[in-house]
Image (tube, rainbow, N blue to C red; front, side, top):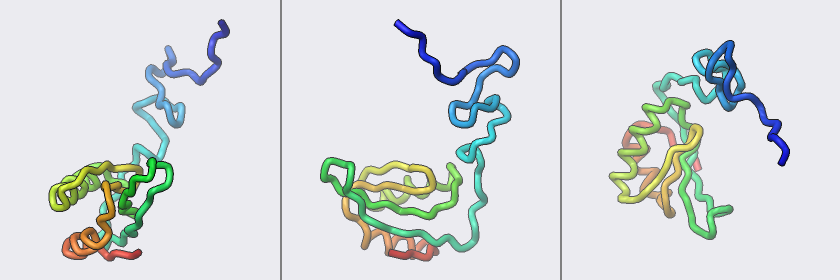
Length: 116
């Protein structure tokens, strides 16, 4: 059996390495670690996706700032208001089912500019 020739995950000089960018974990350079400030006016796009999900439809809220705390709080409120499941992905929220109309109203009430 051959040994795998993947990239290193630990270095005796620097310790733990980031799996995305390869830099030491405490000095990670990848964009996933950077937090954006939440702007005063947020413009989001709402769309429906069903490809690659076994025929199930998912409503995607895209164009959010890359801020984990902001995204998690918004997702929690939207899931509670809509009574559905969902998840946060890289700068986007995914909610189960076709919830576009209800989302437009909820996001507009929070002061977001909604497209799509």
